[in-house]
Length: 172
Image (tube, rainbow, N blue to C red; front, side, top):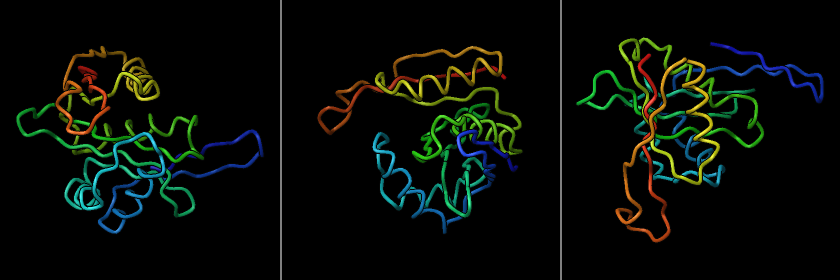
């Protein structure tokens, strides 16, 4: 899927391409996550694993051969009608352009998600951007967005990690 985004500031047209990742993208995805400054940075190995073994439920957004967005997701084994979104990352240069929502829509339109009726993700109470992203997706899909407790702050080994709440969007 290719989407053209027009930027009115400079009257230029930018082409953003959405595609499945490959293992060769893992290091660049790790760099993207690191650059956001607000997402939990996991090991480079974890991003290699997602790009290699979960490519059918992960999406890369690319502009001029540069990764500018990434969504990692998987289908939890006990919940065959759910896709769980682990992280949504958008490069600082692309924020405010709807890339995050387009990444999620690309994911939900994949054959691997044809039997998905719910999208779930966990979000911290201070992550207003992610809360808006998931609530906006629910609104666009004309379905509910239920928020419930998931991981309490005291479960995390590092001091200062916020609780994570589950956002459940659907049914589609």
